[in-house]
Structure formats: structure tokens, C-alpha cells
Length: 363
Length: 105
Image 1 (cartoon, rainbow over the protein chains, first blue to last red):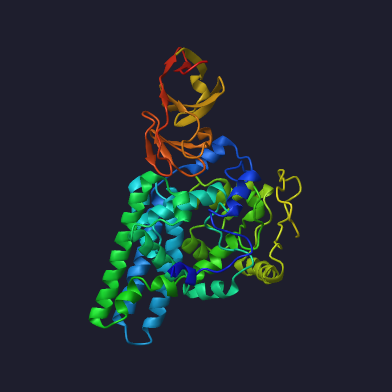
Image 2 (cartoon, rainbow over the protein chains, first blue to last red):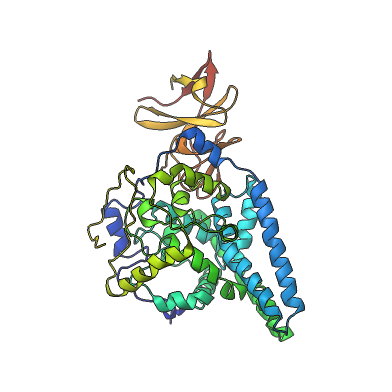
């Protein structure tokens, strides 16, 4: 039996990249389409896109220092309850913070120096149990066809919402086995149809090699854990992806959750949420999500400035995560009964034109 | 191939590029520094996005949509998702004008 079938769940629409929705996206002109972007003066944009190594070097140094400090505390206090707060911090910085480092370095915008982006990207991919090749192509597609059903492989808010899965994934209970099975499948030389749809022939051998390296490292850690008859090695490498991911869900799901599918306007299918400096450090400013999708070449450290430049044309940002989840939760609950329901953000007066291209709007 | 008068040198900032549409095709003309200019196809080989909205860093052009990168001197793809090279065309500066040698129908 295909193991993946045990950890996948039925949806109203076919969210796969090879099903009927794929052709439908092409037929509707939604695949690889032109998207609305708030116009920004070229000189201003160039200054925002400017690359530098310093902010990411500083932030990665802090990140590593927190990981080493909290990890060391957890190891030294292993066996006592005092280890818990150290592992709490370690897990959040291992998993929740690794996602944003993975993301920014995947875009190649965090550092000016290419090898630094690549090195952090590979490390963060491993921590997140993501095949760095597969996910690079997956994320490129996410930017081409953001929340276009049948095209975007990174739609986390499928309808109707799988509340049980969302809740289990607060501790990675579904996502971690899915990630490991996907890596093991790649390690076995298999690229399933959805991955083959994304990755060109020339990159596939590399994807298989990365799958093998990741699986070999995780097997090694598991063997050390068994040999030492201690959970500690896995608490340092592997399990944090499960016990530390909760904050990423809290900060990251609002990116698109509850918003429209199949529209060509980031202002309608993405959400900007204002966060405090600690959250923005962990999340590397990905809370400015509409801005990021409009101009993915702007590094994370310049996104607050980009927000100031384009905000006159965007829906008012949610002032806090609390506010964002206050609109998301009722919407998601209603989607259980009415999967076509979604939140339609209010554009400011005088905002650039948005042409709805989907006919099943019920909001 | 004929040499085409594309634009004035001062129309392109240093470390920047402009788009040139000619005979139904689109090109990108880069000015790296002073009179160092290059010309390539104007669309990214990955998903046909106009490179003119991208970022020039040293001798690379970065696609504005997916951050793929090319060396503007050779057209070589140096960062995925760009995998295929861009075509390049001779470019030079004469009397303050940028000339490019591109195909003509």
C-alpha cells in the first residue's frame, strides 16, 4: 500500500498538480498569468532591492547563538524538568525560525553573497525536512501561480479545511511523517507526478541525491539515539521539527488562509499582518506577505520600507496576529459547511484595478 | 545582422538595464559601469518574465519573478530556477549612443 495514502486527506477540489484542476487553470488563463502589482518608481525599487550581507549575517549569528545556547542548556539539564524551557526555545528557533531562513535564502535575497544564501538554504532545508531541490521548484511555482488550484503546490488552506490535520500539525504529527516519506521516496529514486511536474529533467538527479543525504543523516541520528538508548540526539536533530513548529503555523498560516483561490491579485489572496519585533525577527518580516509576493526581489530587511511605499494601494493590514486569527477562525469554521466561502479584503479608495476572474464568488 | 541604435548611454543608469522591443522581439540592454554595456534576450528562459524589471548586481541579472540569475556577458544561467542560457548580442557605445547587433527580419 502506498504509505502516502495513509497521510493524505480528501478535498472538495483536486489540489494535485496533475488532476483536472490543472487544465482548468490553463483554460481560465490563470496559469503563468500577469498579476497586479502596485506600481513603484524604479529608483525607489532599486534602492529597496539592494543586496547587502550585513543584516542577514547579524541575524543568522543571533539565530545560531540562540540555537547553541538553548540546545546546550537542554543537553546539560537533560533528565530534569528544567530542560523543558530550553527545548521550548530551541524547538521554536530550530523549526519555526528555520522556515523563514529557508524561504529568504531560497529566494537568494537574504545575503548579497550567493554561497551564503545557498549554505543557509541547504541547512534550513534539512532542519525543515524539505528536499532543497524539490522545494526550490515548488516555491518558484508558488510565486508563479499563487493559490491557483491545480498549479500551486504550497496551498496550506485547502477547502474544506482539514481541522484535524491543522491541529495535529501544531506538533508536526502529520507534516513530519509526510516530509520524511517524501524524502525517503526521493532517496529511493522516485519523483512522484506532482514533483515531476515541477522539476526539470536536468535537476532530478540532484533532487534524488539530496533526498539520500537527508535520509542518511536522519537514519544516523536515529541509530545514535538507539545505540545510546536516549531520546536526546533526536531532541537535538529531527524532533524539533515537530515540537517547535507551532509558532510557524501561528505566524505563517495567515499568509493566505481564508482568502480567495484563483485570483490574479496578491492583495486579494494574501495577507499582511503587523507583528512585534521579536515575531518579525523569528519570521524575517514575512508578515509583509502581500509586499513579498508583489516584489520577491526585495530582501526581508527592506520589506517594512516597501510596505510604506505600497500600503496606500493595499487592504489595511491586520494590526496583530490576534486580529488576523479573529477573522480567520470564523471563516475556516464556515468553510466546513460552505467550502466556497472566503474573506474578501477591502481595497482602499482609489486602489489599482482588480478584475475578478472566478465566477463562484460567494463572499 | 545590422547594428541598431538602441538608446542614449545616459538613458541607462550604471548597474541597471532597459528593455528594447525590436521586430517583434524583446531584448535587455545592460550598463554595468561607464561604457561597459551588454545585450541579451529580454525574457527569462524560465517563465518568460521581462528581465527589465530585474536587478543588476555586478555582471548578473536577476529575474524579478523567481530570482533566477544570468551572467549578462555570456548569458549563462547561474542560479535556478533559471537553467537555460540567454542569447547574447554584441553591444557597444559610439558617441554616447548604445548600439546593439540584433537580428532583423
